[in-house]
Length: 94
Image (spheres, rainbow, N blue to C red):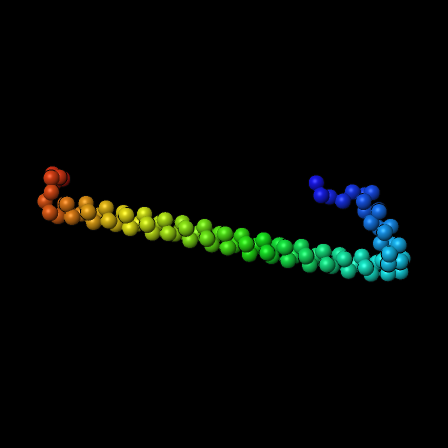
């Protein structure tokens, strides 16, 4: 979908030949090719930067979740350690 077939390419070539003439057509085609390469390169760079930002945001959220889990685990460890030190209801192990 969205591809250019042979017939469309032929029509574009004929229109280009009529508009710019046979002498300038190769020069114009070369310029359009360079413009297309530059546009594709810019689009690729934009996609890469956008993906990097999404990855950074994803990693930040993972780190926040890990920090929260670590804090909860530390709180639980402290709570359980406090019960053991105060001689709570748990029997001592051998």
